[in-house]
Amino acid sequence: MVPCPHPNSRKDETVRQPAIAVPTMFARLGARVSPFHLVCGALTLVLLLQVLQMRFGRDQGIYAMVAAAILDGGMPYRDAWDFKPPGIYLVYALAQLMFGRNEWGIRVLETVSLASLWPAFWLLARRFNHDARVGSLAASLSVLIFAELEFWHTAQPESFGGVIAIWGVLAAAPLISEGVAPRRMLALSAVAGCLFGLSAVMKPNFGGGAVVLAGWLLLGAWRGRWGFKLATLGSAATLAAAVTSTRDLPQSFLQRSLQRTRALLGASAEEREGLAAQLYSVADVS
View 1 (cartoon, rainbow, N blue to C red):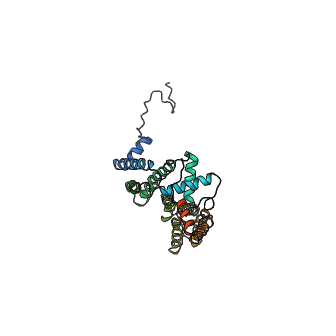
View 2 (cartoon, rainbow, N blue to C red):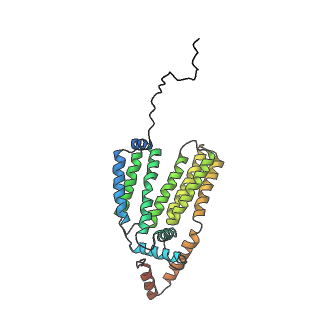
View 3 (tube, helix red, strand yellow):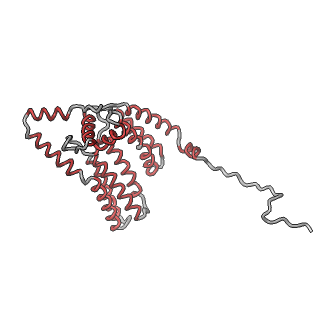
């Protein structure tokens, strides 16, 4: 009797399995990155290197002076005064804390901030245009326009506030599409509101993004896209996050700016000249 082979025995069998193509991470990345993306990326890199070499103008010196006062234990609008919102002084203080008191530390943070526009515009373009090349082109053009402003108009509140607002738009983008789960809607509303609030600390008009988003959610409820209760909660989460992010802005920025403005208007000519000399001199941060 010839023993039957075990059903699971493959001693005398040649098993041929179909070849399965498993793309590696680099292969997937190469399939998505076209020469167009590479050209835009190279252009953006060259422009960012130029921004990195820019130094201080008058405004940047004032921001650095206030930031130095903060790191020395002082308070903006009390120990060192300027009329800009408080966020920019905190960014300069962070740069001085990380890289020391010099003129290039803030440029490092600025180039990192500008570089983050690439993934932000990439994701926005893929969502709304279904073509990431639009995002690559938008990022390159944004950095190009920014670099053309040169040292005088860069490293400003708009430089950082605008980027934060773009990320707020990206957080709010899924709310435009249909079928967003209630919990995800509330979470995205709060995140977007927080980002718009932080951008308002840099420049108050950027905070209008939170108002627009809250209005969009209520409009969606009126059109029947989601329940009015959910839209109200989403709007409340957006505005609450924005207000929480800017809760110290009215007192520290508006109130003290008004006080200083009244003092300036009531000062004598000699006092105004002395104050102007302090405000418009470039700070020595070496």
